[in-house]
Image (cartoon, rainbow, N blue to C red; front, side, top):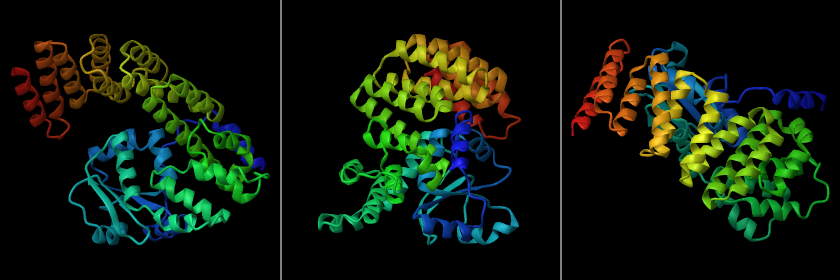
Length: 385
């Protein structure tokens, strides 16, 4: 218990947790997946692969990605060109890197994707895979027939969660019959059932956090807190409710204060983009850049991409995006950064500046061996039209 409490204290100052990759063998990963009733996510990469390196540096450390994949998968990185991985490479041959695979514990490929993905696309990829292996149907009839055994119900809730189906009613119905929340099965039930921050179950998770962490590990608790807060943000966006947005931010501050500022900024950006409020959106991204992103070229570039998707034609957003895109290009020097800057200029009607930035992208690409010439050509052709 003391160890768990110390871990909780330390977690307030730790950085965001990305994907926690398993360091055992493929066979050991399969055994772990069987024991935990999870799928296996495999990043099949090569040491020389540029897109692989970018995913490792920018996507896998993302806290949202980590929260989702740590909760739902056994995660494995496999260098497909190392001799010790030849058996796996022979069984699962790939044509290009990275190849991202999701397999079941028996080794059957559930879903495969060739090429790098951003954080949102990777999470969607994982959700698609879990949807393909929905085991909740195995529980439905027995539940309808009246089985209310706690372990059975816990398995049902877990299966519903992994299939992205509603489970809160079953959790609430069960917990409403309980007077002692500190039994091992009830502590596990609270952990699995706390899928939304705006719920009584989440409050029970915070109340009994130390006992749950001692039983299931602090990482599992932190992952659940973050996922629950993210789900409440999604609900806030769906219902356009600032009250729910504020509640998600407050619950994140209570549960993971060290991650609360970055979470709040991401939540606000998502909310104000969806509710089409460019003024509040711009204020949020400016605060986020100042506190979290600063002048980091890769993070600035990612932020600019988000801004272009959120408000592709809003003049004030584009004006700010131009400044940060220019800083990212000058500090990072990558061809894709210059091409993004060219796109910002294009959207503002700055034809010559867009053309110059595109040519700089072409020059930068010469030392990167990325094959960016085709993308630059397409951009310039579109610019002329």
